Image (tube, rainbow, N blue to C red):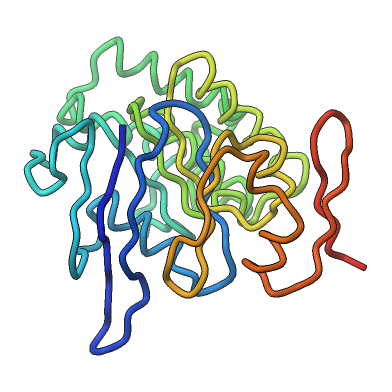
Length: 252
């Protein structure tokens, strides 16, 4: 389980995240929602130790984040940030293989190779295995990085806006894939996502932030309410029943 208490982050005298605390479910898709500048990405980066908090503590499976060995943490948790980019001219297969480095140390075993092939197959990128990353479209490149994160095969997978650059078809496939990973392999997927209808239909738990604070947290059904969403986004949002779930209408 991932939990955090009194997490804050400030730059100079301005807080971008303040007194955040939560105990997240150990399995399922946990969505972080909120407007631009709400603190979503900051919180995700602190949880993954990419960013140091100004105060507070994060615990991974009951162990303080600062006590984790870097390589052991990389076997437990992986994060894919916004707009990942590699300056090196490498192929898709080589990029995805980087996801196995915490396990292999660069010397790939048969198990590592199988994990790489599996990640490429799951993301439907196998046919592009030999293509160079800089030859891909933005959407294909994003899928390659998602494959790398999946290949790392960690209990906790953190995605910061992974649907960027993806069309509707690929976005749906990724959300269905993350749902499968959470259900069939007991993964805990933490995801920052702007499309609240993806949240409504795929997430199990929602953390809603506004102005650097967690204002609401709970199971998806309890958060997908017009009053809560209007408060979080400062815009009119109607929540209607649809297909056994709830659809959020905010285009009118």
